[in-house]
Image: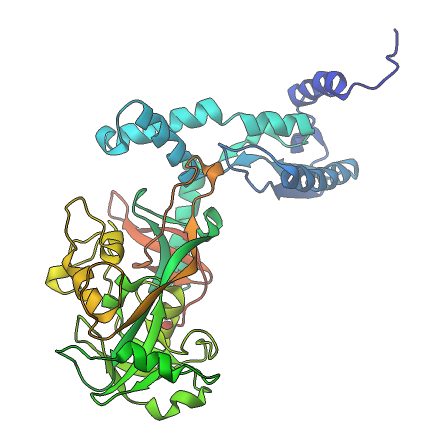
Length: 450
């Protein structure tokens, strides 16, 4: 037998690994001693539609070393392989294929669409498993699992049922990233933050009263008050006092239920306990103090919209504020807003872009509270708009939707919380007990829940 001068790992490893696998060398049963110690390890399941990268190679190598060492020490070792369903990434890939066919998932219906997803998994889901074999992972392939397998799904349901029965999870409200296009919640792990050019809108809220007529010279008063080094967002005019907030999403102001400032901000301590009036809506907004507000950022005042921002959500819980959801799952203004603004798309509400050649009612009214470059409507309590960098959440190009902007509307969903579990309740077909589906989230103070 002639020995090659150079080692060819592709030829050698490609020949031996199938032999190891066919002889079940990596199963616990390979150790015949029934009294041997048992060592079990579950592989962190990679996404079924993806490919292994350098991080996987390092992680799998460390696990493989541990599994082989314990096996050589005489232990009965189970290193359990499997893949994750990668729900959003898979859905986007399948929907992209359907688009090429001229249909949508709604055209197919739920059952047919799920069937297409399983077909996609069967066709494209083998890449990672082949790569794991090329790496030489000494996993027990006879017990390979997929996170959507019926047995695993039932096990997850059973765990959540037990947690609920034992009082370890309970109902609450939480904040999610919502994709209007996919009509589903998106994990923070599945999005990337990207800075884009946007606009910063300065809005003046009257303190202690509502306004029905235009206030002249407000922008000039703001400029004069901030001419020197001492900046302020508290304006005093002959008509009344105003507080100035800055936001990149003016359409959410319809859901404001408070204005906050830092309790250590000496500029505004005299405003503690007072209230402002929300322009366009007329809702009374308490002026609250909260340490989360940065004194040196913007004007030092922050509009609080608990139903559409995670920091505002936390403030809303701490200060027992009202939660008004004004952007719905379809990314349109909801019934919670004044009637004439309902149904506007969030971008229409912000920029006024529509197919018809007119300015929407909302933007026309906003021109009275924000000095915009659209139209010549004079501001009622407006100060101005300027360009600013805005950090938005997007699905990465690798997920199959390059450049797709998913400026997720934050909204509140009911769920079940506790011990880092967050689930929604269902009833089994036979009605015998509750089934809880879920995802991971942080703890919530039970005292803050309804």
